[in-house]
Length: 334
Image (cartoon, rainbow, N blue to C red):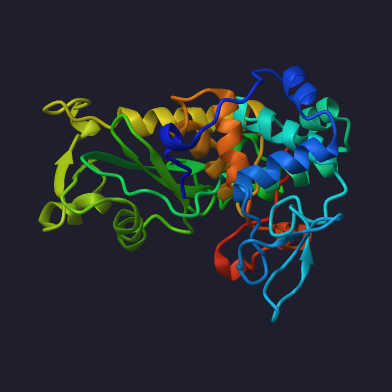
């Protein structure tokens, strides 16, 4: 749910810090393929079908050494770039502008900058967001803040046929907005999860998946977090905003509220509207940039390329969840 890597031990020095320098460095497809192969395998080509390493290098790519497999493959097989007609040079530029733009970039703007259509840019950016999704997140520890927010426009600004029932308002209302739960280690990384409902069970599941036992859980006064008071696994500190408390014994929830501010400003200012079933990928994108905020744009780019395994097809991307799964009518980013 969040993106992190031990960059001190793995990052190399790469010779670009701007988009023109990046395009000069990746001057042709061969250079891009060599770079991607180094980032994926570090000189040890591995078959994406059976996992056998030390594959043969051929004139057209690679061939598995395993006699039971013996399949041919290229460096892009098993990655987000597989079967894409977009050159790797453009892919790498898309990765760079997506990961270096502090509040993200829209598909219209990316299409204009990269020389591709808006539809292609939209697909490319979603596959980049798939790269940014953490495959094996590290556990948060020490002082950990948890909070929830609701993503969705004001009812007064919506078209009449898209508004909720008469009398419904914003705030904590999952009928007209999409709930998002976030956990952040104070001064550290964040984990974000889009949820159908904000309930004790969904919060408990997220905590157990992402927080080390023995940590201090800092929350506001919302009754949903009350169960932590009797927990034997965590220490619970309540900063009750309704009583005018914003710092209590050095504890606060400013870290997670700061992340919500970045996320909402990005959605309002860049994307304008995000479909509920695509929202998790946007949260992954913002979490990835937040968790790598202490390194440079070029280092963040390299970490993203190393995390490019896993294919997302267009049919998977546009598949709409059923109403039973709690999602509303689709919206499209502008």
